[in-house]
Amino acid sequence: MRTYDNFTEAYVDLCRTLRDKSDFESAPRGMKIKEKLGVQFRIRDPRNRLPYVAARNFSVSYFVAESLWYMSGNNSTEWISRYAPFWKDISDDGSSANSAYGARIFKRHPRIADGAYVQWEYVKEELKRDPDSRRAVIHIRTPDDSIYATKDVPCTLSLQFFIRNGDLHLHVSMRSSDIILGIAYDVPAFTLIQEVLANELGTGLGEYVHTSNSLHCYERDFETLSAIADSDDDYCLPMAPIPREFPTAVLMETERSVSRMNLDSLNITDWSTPTTDEDPLVSDWRIILASARLRKFRQRETAQALLQKTNFRGYRFFDR
Image: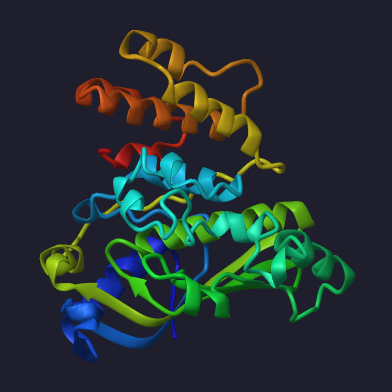
């Protein structure tokens, strides 16, 4: 298992390895891929979670939206498709997403023990009861998904949390990881969830370990894979610690307000000025959501200017 200081370092190296040393070329569902089986890596600093790689064209607005989608327990494809339209096309029932991990983590879910319990509360209580426990497991994919999920089969198998030496470590197991479309957002989201739980338990933040049973790249993305593998971006910055109580409700209301704004309402000064005692993360995510809304009105330059007003300068690396 390779160990990296941050996700950017891991991501570039994984792309390089997959391009140059893939184990197989296969074609599941008739689509050609490069593939490595049983890939595992460790990240020492989970706060250094964003992939600062220009060739990837990472969308920081989608990272924010997907994180909120997860943290709120929302599974609406209509909601998340405002930030990534592909979600409309992979819903099995036309309105909800099986891969809305938050709905399986933070709420009772019919495919998790028939909705008998909330997994987030279970792992918290388990680790409070026995900090050395090995039972703090959140299940994502279930046997039901093998039968009832057709278009959207969850890629993630489980999240397992450990407290060791006063720090919370997270081990994520995935049946399948698309290195371009999947893992670039999965690692930032899962490390954010790891930090939220560490805050709720009052522990330090430990390491993040990721296992991909199939790490792969589709043929349509081979050029992007190669560009990332050849990347020499000299930029990497950890996010500041998130608030002790993650402000999910406040941020969801902010998103709701922003999504209803018309162009005249999106005054750059108003949306970039924090309110009294506002946490920097709330201010930054409001700016990012407003910037994404401006792009809906084709106001690219104004959106870019707004993004430059974030407190965390790491966000400014990203163009979208």
